[in-house]
Length: 245
Image (cartoon, rainbow, N blue to C red):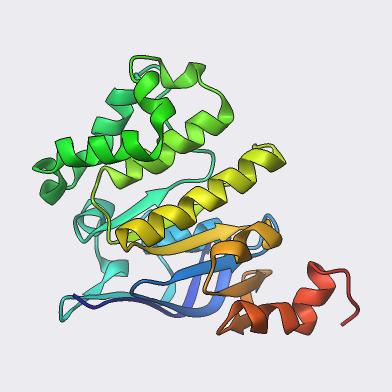
């Protein structure tokens, strides 16, 4: 069941403000691809274009799955979820007055995931034991790290084939950032997920990424085919590694 996400010459923005310009990238089945860049450079807008939350003004977003090609830019968000794409949004976006388990159940919106609720719930609790302990607790009363676990687990409830993770390190301590990134990597390996992760913490992201892109002012400045290639790039050295380009 081959899977490939392709973004080609994408422009997108908000009114007169252009957030993305000419962005092209791809994610192949089984990869973890990192979109790296500081705040305000368009990473979240790119994620929203893939999930149908922002409509591009130019370009294509295509998902190839099981021999079929789907134009994501022409589909509503709920149809994109049905194709097996799940988003862990920046800032977690939980329902704070619902319990942990109620938030998880809302993640099982995808029709094909509804018959697997029991299995996916057991998996979520296995991956994040603290969520099982706190399943009756209101989500809004949990710590930031626990809320991030819940946001990831909620996405997994949809039985995704492609998991989008937007800025998982935001608002977390360095230790929790490391633990969260490690967990994403472990989940990908254990369950064969394909992952596209937007992250500003370069050093943490490349621990689990197969390759990555650097986005600067809404444009792809670096497209590397491996982490080694990323580390050797002059722009990366200047922005992240303390070198001189």
